Length: 193
Image (tube, rainbow, N blue to C red; front, side, top):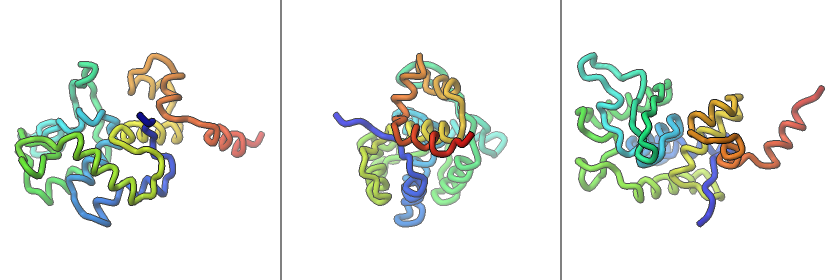
């Protein structure tokens, strides 16, 4: 079994993110990728999201947070809905005209009453990755790892990432984010005292 990597290159990340928006418009697929990148949910949790998790019918507006109970850990996880997620949810709502609270955000094409399958989600991610020229192993878990890697690159403290991922040590988080020699080299080359 090969290791899953985060998407580190920003140009490739942009190409990956926008493939199902610009090259092959399928808004459900685009939304799945954007939500996966911005929430760091495991794919099983992401695919189980329903409209009631993101939209308040009484107030007729999107919620400020997504609250889920993680399948793997059984713990509650609360994630703020950022502007990227809000934008993609609006696109999804506008283009598909479905936002009944019990419907899945990412329904199966064959049976819209069911969520998208994990295997189909993997194929969607692989298609976008191939388009972006990503040679390293990219899978569903890459969305989660990319969030952490990019957050780390933007200066998010390791302790916060450890908490988000529920890791017991920074060493685990460092390995999870695939921090390698080229990342260390960049620090040495950019810091001039």
